[in-house]
Amino acid sequence: MGTSKTDIGTTTISIIATLAVWEVLIRIFHIPGFILPAPSAIFVEAMTRYQLYLYHSWITFYEMVVGFLLAGVVGVFLAVVIVYSRIIRNIIYPQIVVLQIVPKVAIAPLLLIWAGYGITSKVLLALLVSFFPIVVNMVTGLVAIEEELLDLCRILHSGRWQEFVKVRLPNALPYLFSSLKVASTLSVIGAVIGEFVGGSEGLGHLIIIANTELRTSMSFVSLFSLSILGFLLYGFVVLAERLLMPWEKWQLASA
Amino acid sequence: METPDSREAGGRSAIDVRNLSKVYASQDGPIQALSDVSFAIADAEFVTIVGHSGCGKSTLLRIVAGLLTPSSGSVTVRGRSVTAPLSDVGMVFQRPVLLKWRTILNNVMLPIEMLHLPRLEGGERALDLLKLAGLIDFRHHYPAQLSGGMQQRAAICRALIHDPSLLLMDEPFGALDLMTREEMNSELLRIWSERRKTTLLVTHSISEAVFLADRVIVMTPRPGMVADVIDVELPRPRMPETKLDPRFTECVRMIGRKIGLLYI
Image (cartoon, rainbow over all chains, first blue to last red):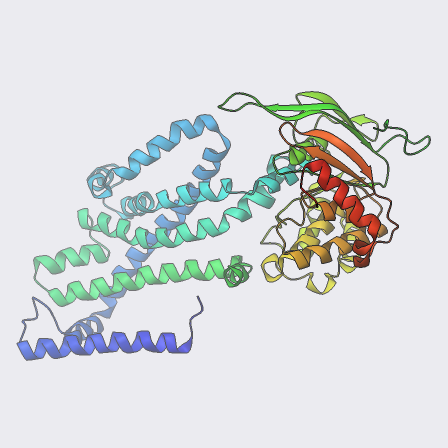
């Protein structure tokens, strides 16, 4: 899974080529800017009003990061409780699944009523959208232990706590990180849904304004900013994964 | 058959298994895994159990380790009846089951940590064992960087680190290729001759059972019963050449006949 210089080169060239073709097509067919702006127009929009975009990007980034981190804490906590208590598993698991099935867009207006039009409701939505895969994966990681290893723990009189800290938790790390990668991209969706439904800040809010005023290049700058934010958070997760699990690269090499 | 105390004059046996039976409940009714199994193992003796797969060998080993409770009968280890998992046991399984996030040295140290034994001494013992197993240069490697045979050697070090009085091995080389397996047999005997542990090893390879053991317990399948206990009168230390000794081949042939394989 290594990334070589040629890999990066190929990706960069393909992006530049796509933008070039886009620009040329717009100019040849004289497509009006409010339908599809040229990359150059989008770039000019981004540069002239960069402060506006930076400010709203920061708001959205804040919402998604806080929501994502809370989802991590809540998700891991729920997974541990589900694994260790049968009663709580029977109470909580069905409810979590039901919550996951309900479309978050449908809950968003309610959350705005309960948590207000400020940042809190967006954080909650980001949390709600992204915590489910964390719970499910973490439960799997805590339970998927080789039978022999559990026998070994019993022979060594490890007790529940040592078994959890020294065997189950580290065993769950790869599962946790693959779910965190998914959650990091979902948290963007959560934050933007919140901003769509109500509020006066964030990139989602900018997109709504841009649409009503038919300022399409503004929509596009907001969209690109959103993907950059999602990419950033995803990148942080990947970086943390590499730092916290140095053994994984050997695992992949031997697999 | 021998009585438990016949082997070592005056000394009580290290493991004493008496009239052991185990019945598993299943959807198709109860399954008798073990039936009236009795044997005794003396201190520092190397005993192997050989039989078809499904003859209850692993069940027997897990009962001796205190991981399973028998339906009837008893297991006594060093004079004490086994009712819970024994920490005085080193266990090696068919798979190495090392913790993939720990280096080899830290894997070997796991029992020291879990049993809250002094770390300094444990660390020295770990290095000694890794030296003995030829893994000292790999102590800072992760398991995935090592071959299957090396991983299993690390698992043996882990089983010995807390200086248990019993070493229980459940088909420890069953997952290895034949050449590695033969190497590991010699390697195990070399380690065993340095740390004379009472050892009970389960295998379905007759030649492995004979090569390693002082005595071989032959088991019949469904229900698992002791068909015979055979003394292996081959001198130690045993070398790969030992397998050319006519006494070795005779012993293998005899056990094969007991298990019901056809030998011409």
